[in-house]
Image (cartoon, rainbow, N blue to C red):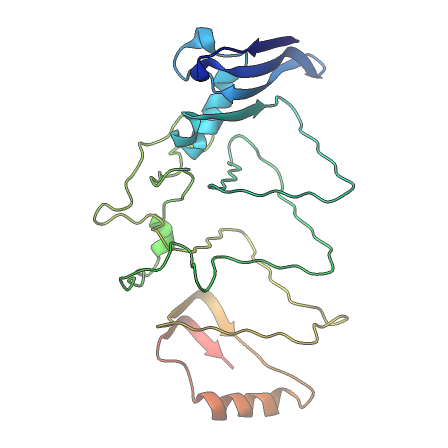
Length: 270
């Protein structure tokens, strides 16, 4: 293990660094881990980089280069990273937050579970929505917009495309300016969710433990929903204590058919 404390009057060269080279990961396998606080290492001069830095730099560049040219704390671990807390954990972030788990460098499942007295998620606010208060009216995306969507992995205002080869983190196309005409990247003020999977299962409550109240409210300038089914029905049912027939009749009297902008491929059953 090496310890480097570079204390100098030159603020551009101040840092504290701990490096553990060639530590065991598993039989016949070793790795290098380091922690550096202060100024970041040179991105180009290998003689001024700690052991293991090139590997860490390649991974960090998956989120762009903007955040690598400043200073702060740089921590790289070869192997597993385990963190346990018996009390509260408080994390306050004043800048951008990026979590990138790529298909090439980190295969395996992704699991998140929460038990709590309350659970609250907020994206933007009434007085400060995502992207700030806009003076222009955004345009609706075209059908199948997600197929050409680019992803905001950069800490700067520039957004770049996913790697052309996900198994090679270095195979990265150049940054793309999302303000350029015809670009299909996430733009300022967008909140987007895209999912590709073999099955997408969403449940609210269960037969044995239903949720007493489910409430949803939407306020929008316009609402457009598209659903496409390659086979079978796009099926929706509403059944309460009075039975599905009464619920269907109430919905029919109140709604009067499909909304004007609900375009569905396949048959629709109500």
